[in-house]
Length: 450
Image 1 (cartoon, rainbow, N blue to C red):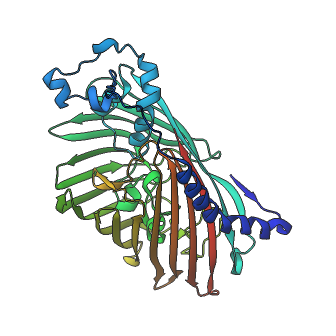
Image 2: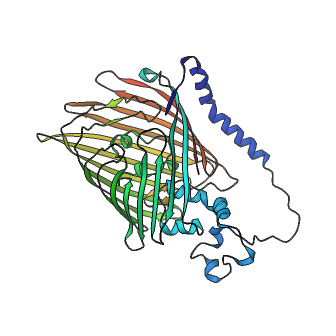
Image 3: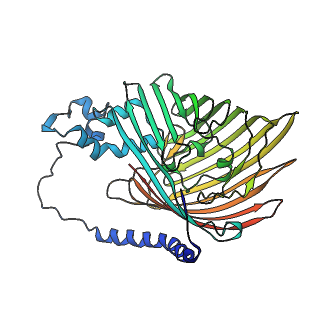
């Protein structure tokens, strides 16, 4: 849903866009100065007789096992709907949007309910300063989705999410999941294909507004599939057998696997290595192309064009990542091969490196082989900065899709747990047989989930 900006007003919008980070910083500093501690009268400490579920009602907690606190003690008669709204709804939203939920977690957070609703909305604006993109400035709703998640038993849960952004790609996640402590999770329905680290990371935890060039070029969309994933403390595997995309009937059938390991995993830091491989049988015209890490424009600076003689595509990804304290980083490299009729093969490549840091000291969490953003505690705020370099090469033999290199800077502000303001500046350089392109992009997004 893109709303172009009229030419006479573009300079004003660009000025507002560039001033936004400064305004956010100023407002945060002013608010912080106004938050003076409230002096409490000298008296005995008051103990909340109804502590949060994370302190009192979580299965296996020390208080529950010792009998120190049990639900219903001390006259705690808060209704389940009130408790869910106040303490747990946001945690459920984060778990579900990151796809890290399981039946036991949901059942604990739902507090007697069998289901709840969730959603997200992301309006954004982008300004383009050079070349063929210079007239592409505009607003859009990048994502607007709603869904329902629930539990059927202690081991069986479901998730349904509908994308309302436009009239296309309406079905997002729609699946049943069976959880086993011994065999991991079995997922049946429309779901993500097991792929690279960036593709498996939820939108709430992305450092930049858009994923890097090679990820958007080579990654598959959600598919109807049967998936199995099993994660231990320092090792994990996720395998998927998939077929068509129900939204556009794309694809035929294929298999995918992702394997990860953690050579180091401790309180002081984590090291992550892994690889992914996708093999898909094709029954449609195929192409590789990507936007310039900005979604407002529909122009792709690199594009192989359509080829209807592709029999198979193979996509290999290698990933190395780590985090220590508030600092995190990742490197991924990709190689893709088209197997075409007449024993013709074409190879394409890409890679990126990305580094992020929370200036306010929050640490990233690590769940199911991916990094999940930290929880922003009530009453606190967070600032995050990042830098990224990405590259994709779509030239090989008779295919001249072009080569593109990007360099980006990111600034993110979290005024509360379910709200994030994002700002990106991107320099792009595309080498193409029909004319090189280079220029700058400035863009901003508001991300809100519930």
